[in-house]
Length: 323
Image (cartoon, rainbow, N blue to C red):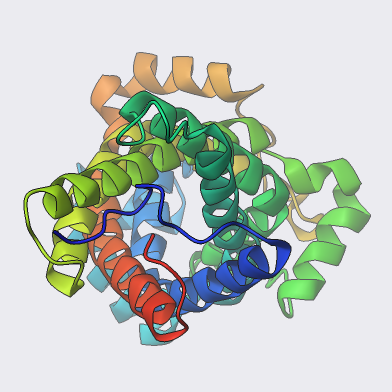
């Protein structure tokens, strides 16, 4: 019988082990984020089509109901292949904070909350609460990097529209928003951002954790195939529950103005997350909350696959117990 993670035989959590797992999770996320990032850019553009002024290049180029592939190839054709990686640097910075904190927090909470004398397996409801808490905490800390990532993803479109370039690099973006909008502006959209992260991690971590234990409990080996099956289920669950919050947070974050936007930006469209949710459903229908679901899942599936396989393999190589 293969050892099931969380069955009481895991090594105790120490500051050193937590730090090592933090570094390993960041390393695995670096690979996954770089490979799948173009789909994140496509998703962001797709979600922002409704917000573009009717006379803008984005609105004129995408009449009717544009799909993922038309947006993807449109970016490549008009802006160049490298535009698919606009904002990848803050995205990587984000994962050095976000993924490290979410993975570390989840394992700490799981270890503290698992009553191994009374519970044969970690209950799914506890796993969901741990994932929700870890995701919200990690995203709050990483929210400024997510804001800069969303803003930089739109730079290629701005160049296409003949608008001035706003940022020289990631640090220039941080300093620009701080200078123009103040320190608190770096957490613009943090509420829907944390809501999305909480839902995503509640589904992702809990589903992966539970699915893996069930598969191991039915005699499967703790190998890449088991990790792949578990990650496929967790990726779909995460995309399903997190896409609506992702649409809301993307639209709110994209409203934050830069000094070069004063003459061309129409101002803030939404007062907050609920206002954005209400207007989106009223003007576009409920399914508008799932704009970008396909690229989200298509990105999340390989991201989840590469992350979990890499993470589990790195843990195995370094002698750390399986997740």
